[in-house]
Length: 138
Image 1 (cartoon, one colour):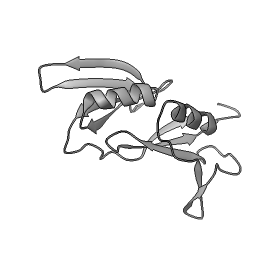
Image 2: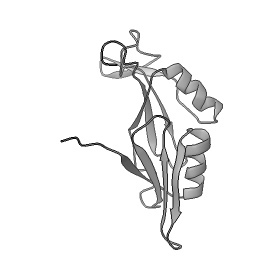
Image 3: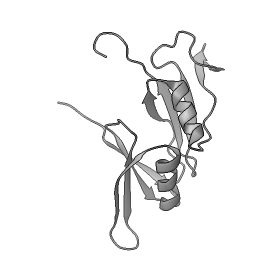
Image 4: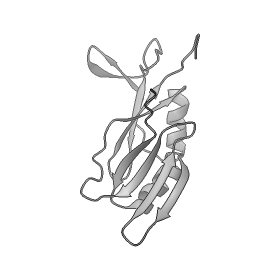
């Protein structure tokens, strides 16, 4: 049986502000913006090429509480440039050695070895990780 993660709810304090950030600054595509009354609104967005989407929903008590969401890209340098050009405060690229974070990409450019981070306006935290998936089965 296949179990596929297709949607993650991201709590935000201001749906319009978050929608604007994810479309303009993070480059996500808008899938749905649906309201049912004054108190219920669902905005679903998908990163380009992803099979998993996010839904931003107003929840001021939990806004900013999601950390460690991962986006995978084939070129971490190009991804950082794109985020910066879109106005996102993306971190410098880093990797891990001996259990600690070290500046710069992974020296071997190993899949899953190089990262950068950014947050949305509420502080929900994202990691972008390089996965080139070269070789057989890629």
